[in-house]
Image: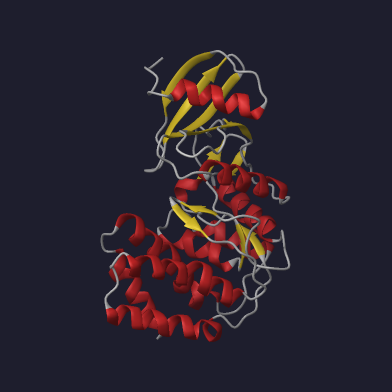
Length: 299
């Protein structure tokens, strides 16, 4: 077993104590390739193998919001696999964050055509989990970015204020948006009701579904690392198409189960804009220019 990171054992003990579970004997800790935000491990214990996420500098409540999102996905009725939360550190200011999840054995052969088909059908099932408003019970996170989820019965109002407008405001305060860009963003936000006239029903979405948040598990397609909220279901596809990674079979299976409404492809750049802005906020780079190019297609 590799040497434990400083503070890891104390966080693990705190997580199990707060979750009301007996602390198992730690047998092994193996790094697992993951995202750029958290350290991830396969945790071998006397009670079985688990997946562990560890971040000494995570925003307070980030892992709790993740666990709540996983619970919402699991409760939706979708056939997609969602890992169960095992143990979680309490939300104490300045405390190290640790989340222990059910370990999903990967498919040794990788995703098959059937896996992609089941992913498409399962997403349609997830999106049929409806609400009467857009938003979520709590604010949560998309990556490290706080995501505002106050309920709103109007989709264009919610998306404009809680998604695009919120990020434009943060980028502006940071000094990253020149005056001409700010003017164009203002025009886009003013036009948003006309650009999103299709009046979608609220659908539960994963919210950050790129290829790294999908797992081809031995038991079937699985979802991890959610940024859940009730949204226009087209917003899910904006992120899925942004960086690629999903074959056409996923979309065709989804369309067979629940066809997307007319004009959805034309609206895709508007839904990709949120994630491009979030990447600009988190990683800088060329994302700012990519975002303003999207804006200027619509203003």
